[in-house]
Amino acid sequence: MTDTRNVFALIVAVMILQIAGGLTAVLTPLGLEAMGTPPQAIGLIAALHAAGFMLGAWTAPRALAGFGNIRLFAAASALNAVSVLCMSLLHGAMFWAPLRLMMGISFAYMFTSVESWLGSSVPEKSRGHVMGIYHTGAKLSLILGPFFVAGLSPLDTRAYTWAAMFLTLALVPVCLTQQEEPPAPQRKAMPLREIYALAPAAVIGVLMAGVINTGAQSLLPVYFEDFKLYGGGTGAAAVASGAAWLGGLIMQWPAGRLSDHVERRLVIAGICTLSGLAALLIAVFGKALGEVGVIVVLGFWGAGSLSFYGLSVAHAIDRTPRELIPHVMSGLLFVWAGGSISGPLIAGFAMRGFGRLGLFGLMGVLLLLVAVMMVWRVRAKPMPVGEKHEEWSPILPTPLASVEIDPRMSEQSEQGELDLGPKTDTQPVAAETEADI
Image 1: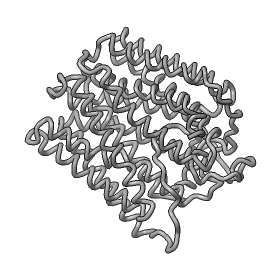
Image 2: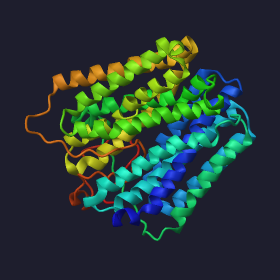
Image 3: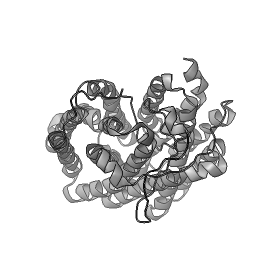
Image 4: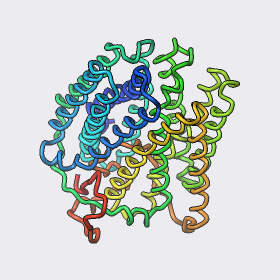
């Protein structure tokens, strides 16, 4: 408990930040829809947010080295709040697109500032416990956020004021904490081909998590805007978002614990099959299920779809030498962000071409494809007899300037730079991380 109290201010800051994140995730697609923006353009703007997130993850270690955690968090929070307020003043997809790009960069900087701080402050013996509290709190905030704007018009200025208020409030615990900032990071990248060679299934899983989850969530509020639940509009979108995240929150612990004893890739295949069937059920029988029925089935979709990212990362950790874990985690984040760019674009075209059937029909097919690929990887490369899984802990896809939060990190990774082999100019270098935080 003492270790948790030491970083309590940072955990509170992220919970406040995630309230704003969940709120804007609902407001943005509904606001664009209210302005008459076609679904593929909504998907494009969601992709720009993911691209900003990716760019922010790439440049965050350099920014941390130059400005420090508190100043970078404060600057990013201010830019984020200003961007949200500008969205309430400037209505139009062409104005919102660069603002969402800026918000993606800012969110990446804020998460990286806090998580690098947590990674250096929490001792190894209690790291899993503290990070479990951290990620559970973050998911609860994502569920809570949309309800602050339930019942408001998606273009109502008050809705964006709520988001800007929480982004500003997140500054308070970070700026007033007495916890000492971590030292400036050193940067080191690992080629993606080497990460794939270590754990192909993990790279596939993380990529598809970005495509499926970001694609579905970018258009989820549009899908549910005609529902009458909780007053319809933003209220229905809040209920839908909450149901999906609640399903993920309930499933993450049992699925993670099961994967400590059973081949992780088979667990991923199982929950993706559950989620894929739920998505296809919504796509084909949505009207027959009724609004309440769709929300219930959506919870089953979220249970699998919003949980397999962490299991994919855990599988990568199982296959990775300890001294390379920070570099592998950083590379996986880059892969996830790449999928998050393409996901909303694909989802937008699917919904444009096939309507409501297209969104969940596409996600269902992709989830079942993930399940098939995981079974194929198990057959291609079974887990060695006697190999022990590392203890699982819940993980959200947020930028990690220090991935020492993983309980397997040893002091060896803190001794200096690592020889990762030659790196050419053609290799993607993103979300760079350091081993000594």
